[in-house]
Length: 294
Image (cartoon, rainbow, N blue to C red):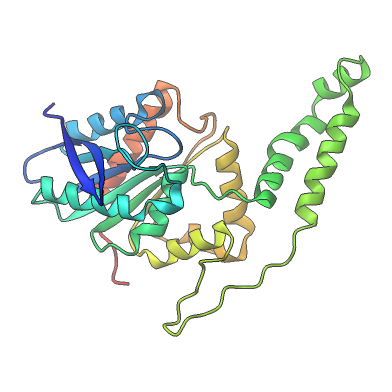
């Protein structure tokens, strides 16, 4: 398959990536950014298999380790601190595939969030594939639990049957439910971010969902959004995108393609789920236009 390791430098640290060259003369490639505390292979070998699938269809792919993860040196960083890592990987990928003019960033969970923070700053980024983006806040987690767990239990025959038979104490669940409701109802109103001289918003101190929405607005390329049905992170994102004022209308933009897997978990652990995501990614890459002028 002509896969090969590529070592590149960032400051005093050494990072490792794997290049899947794809077809000669390819002009659009995919940079796979890793989300969470894992390395470039991905959970259940997801990123490795995705890269090989795309490369077999002619699309160059580069997957790599952020500093502090896998075979990369340096201190571990979270998704809000990997801007320089992404730029270094973009530079390396571009140098290894000289004819490539556009790059799509593919990110799961925190890597999807990192991609939104980064993409609008780099004109080489032509599109984004965002799988189960991370928008975690205390309120968002509480709302997701209420919708995906507690409400289902309260209307479940098994829950009440078990309670009546003394298998567990229902009051513990109800007290937990009360705490969740208190978290949602007790949130304080948040002031909108202040406008800068350039008319942009200063979102440096805004809640994570607001900062991600601003990154979404500033990036003008096409976006493929993939959401799992059996995943709390995806449930949080759905709730934020549906109710938060900062997200009003963003998912309805013509440039956004939404794909949902109702039975899939966070990391698409079954082969059928991984294959479906790979097919959606490939088809979208073939059809998606480049970014519009911003």
